[in-house]
Image (tube, helix red, strand yellow):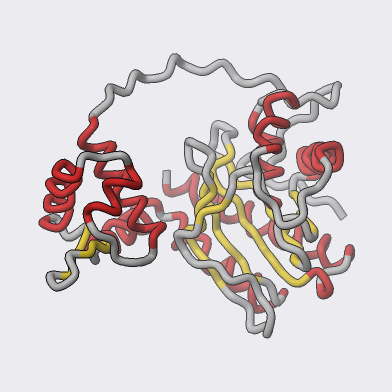
Length: 281
């Protein structure tokens, strides 16, 4: 059974050839003037977020190629704004509680997390999958904004805020289908993508074309061995891919029929979410 959702989740039109559709002409990019202090502050925050442990000034400065005194001045400002905390005894720096407030503000202002949560809960409870609401950022990074876990003993471990390689897994196939890039460009990005079990490029290419044709995508055992991931698109009124609805479960528990039924349910949920987003805009 094939379900065609509303324009918000409709797959891109197929082209006569196997090439992705040519990209829509875009306005000239806005010039971004370098602001070193801002760039360095962001680099420090990202580094501390990835480090998962307290670090001293020298370790941070060495890793980021900063002058230690400059690094220290930036850290002091970040501490004063509660974006970074410091242990007075060890002089080691960690992300501060102010980051939680910022993250909560992002989730609340977007509205997507609140709208998608009931759908995720339904998918998790009725289908025994880990369900996620995912955002595709302007730079095509993939960020989990909402999450509902199943009660199954074996499930995907992820958290709100987790980021994934943009072409990996089922969402990656949708990103490729909507990107407007040619296969030469996509191959370069595909080659740089990390997988647990990387598919052959020709296989992945066929799966991208199938995702474009049927309106949903599938990753079976590539992103993670033993895991099947299904994704459906949620687009802006202009047709740009902005979010995906994702479900992940054990491959042994998701045969072809169950996967198709799951995708059909996800398409219905995505259509309803898309309509709500339009109504709010």
